[in-house]
Length: 161
Length: 277
Image 1: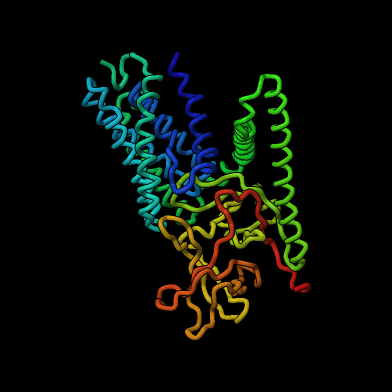
Image 2: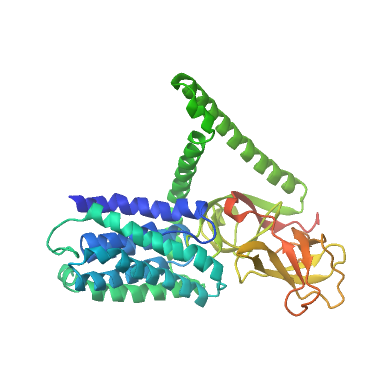
């Protein structure tokens, strides 16, 4: 079953998020592969799949490399809920997926950004524009091919026609 | 439960989001959320995955190094690639050797300080939070608020400790402050907060020097020992520029000589031998 592919994909995404990108990228450009995968799963299979990836992927990423456990998970879940809200009402418009993913991904990044500001991080407009915004764009672009790869035309799929 | 999961996923998601935000807020306020247990269990996994990441990275570095090799014939290409691999390995070993020799000589020139050497095994994926994870913890004598340094300056302070790992709040963190002095004049001040120009880190800002302090470009800045977290006399950086106009904002910019993105090893100061000092 193609849905089983989500498990190794999620493990790979967490590995990339926790162990590869923080050591490569500078200036805040760190596209979140786990988030992109959770959004793709939400669009391609069932919202529950996206939620599971968002929850466990976020928790694992936080446990591996972030000081505050739960933040990534909460942000990814918010994105999944937003994307699901869009796709549920626009089942026939799969071409809009990138746009929906862009909004959902921006919401997740905004949540991480606002939480960081709330606990005392410095407002860094340069990092926001040169790092976070490109990350949001990359994440939303990633959602489309990932969703296409995982799409299972079964009953209950978010984009099932 | 399964029925609820299938019928009302949004409600479950909302409850989970609220609980996770509360958990993150608790974690940020410094309260024990029990995550240390999981972090300890995952620490060996993190170490392994970090080594996998390094190996994969090294593989690509070795394969894609010189482009002229690709123009040669297959036999020669293989031979050159083999040599490149050996050279890359040798280069990596030499670099590691140089880093460790530097750390060792620093340890030997500071006999009054007791150190634990630790490797970086994690960096936060949140670009707005500046912490790193080291592979030494309470089993090695590491406790919270211990100073973490390299010969090139102060890395930061231990903020969280597990049995075999610790998290370090680095000097890049906006809340990080250390008490320092100008080595030449012994004037004391407070160092903290990055000074950025066009988004690039130029250095850290020096505050609260006495009004008539004589500070010049090139002066060496060391820790003053006030506050008790950082032992006195640790090298911090050199003065890059003096802010003559704006006393009340910051007094000077101090160089940050540590490349945090490529930091691989650090020394944790686990004690100061007062007798030798």
